[in-house]
Image 1 (cartoon, rainbow, N blue to C red):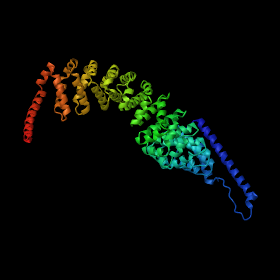
Image 2: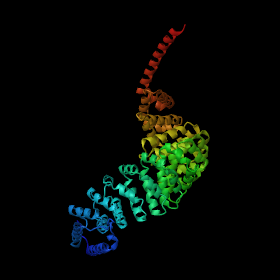
Image 3: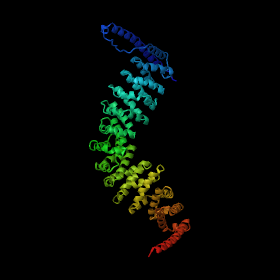
Image 4: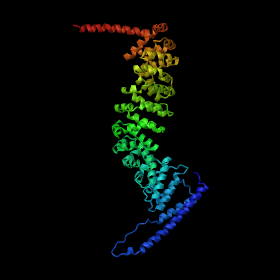
Length: 575
């Protein structure tokens, strides 16, 4: 344990002296007050029951506890100690009716909460906090709520314990305080608690969403920020999302998107993004202000604050699950707002912009509007930059494939998109799904002869080697098939056949796997590729003395037998 420095000891000593002086003077004031009241004629009226004027009474055991507590401080008592003795003393002080004693306990906890030793507050001490937060003294409320907040911010109290010890009740009551400091502290406590799944459910069950929605409209910007962030944390629960929608939270959050404070803008947008993950809420969200939400989110894409434009992009992405939103956004020229974001310095914004574009491109009515030389150039450059990022590459490949209509092929070939897709194949960081999307996109392009010649010109030995390796991995059914499909189109070109000769054994292996595959499409692809390769003398010689030839002979024999059997069967059916 560390020791207090001389300065801190002196400060505590001065504080102790002040409290002792306060207690002594307080006792005198109480005695004088009671004596004067007792002598007053108003209490001596006949036939009238004496009415007691309530004053907090300082009980002897409370005074004794306070004196002992102060003596510990004077003697250099380690303020970090929260042992049994200090706990009992703090309980006595906190549960006293006298605000002076409650203040002593509140100040003690404030010091502990800000102590550099990071002491963890146990459940037993949270029982003491209940009394302090329920105090009728404003200063005690301010100090105790502040110290509890400090413990939460430093992670020195278990959030679930706060709920278990029923502190949620006084915290929610303090939200309705007329004091901004108390409101702000209690609101921030709720924001911290709502970060825990168990706590956020308890907050909603206790009716905490209603006062938070009210405080989200507070004129104090600090209180408003904390309230909106607390609501954002609560929206991580699908059940609480439904509660908030029923409580008319959507118009409030939508209106806050126009706040002059960027933190309020961000957290209201983030809360709406969470709500938008459930498509059942989309109708209610889009109904606010007759489409006001889409217009506002669209304008926020151009925000000077990175996290706001990124969050607006996420919210629009979550909303873009139905035809109305898909077509409305393109009709509102969202592509002109997304283009600058694709060249942005923030990778996360670039990633979410690509995802949103890919979703928009799924609707056939949007593809012409999204197709432009500038868009393809930007997408290609982005793909070359982030060719190792599985999310960007996967969604980019899907986007390009969606735009690969016959009339657009030439523009795609003239852009850096194809080069970016080919380079992405080399990446060891790509996940299987992302690699599949890349290969599928290229397989779609090679269906066009002009595209095949263009891609062949960009092919090299490592790329061919990678494609052959993927074709051999038949356990990854679709990825293998698409890679083999590309090879089949490439073997029409002599330069590719030459590159394949260095992988002749691997080629024979995957062709054999295809010929014995249970799916007809694999068998057909294997045979057509085999026929194309046999035009080359080296491949023909290799195939003639391989297991492939034996297997093909077996297939022919089986086919002849099957044809004879079919002829007999059909012959019996004829009249």
